[in-house]
Image 1 (cartoon, rainbow, N blue to C red):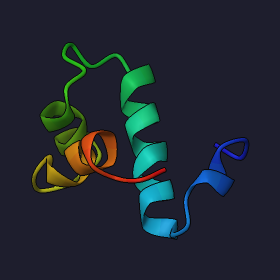
Image 2 (cartoon, rainbow, N blue to C red):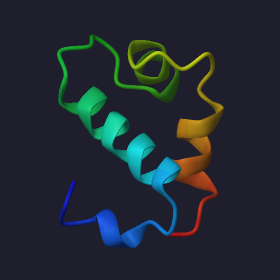
Image 3 (cartoon, rainbow, N blue to C red):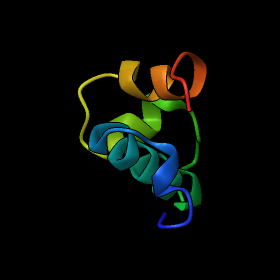
Image 4 (cartoon, rainbow, N blue to C red):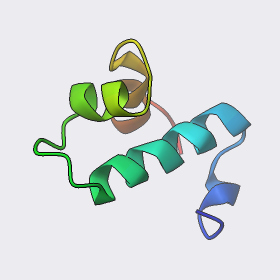
Length: 57
């Protein structure tokens, strides 16, 4: 994540992006925002969806 850390102005999106990448690299049977969000301990997928769809990088 160090290579792309500078793309994020705030620490929260950077941490979420790191958790998203960990989820994508995991052995989860489904790699969607809901499954990954639950796997990393978030209560809903809204933050992951925002990061992918609406956030400015």
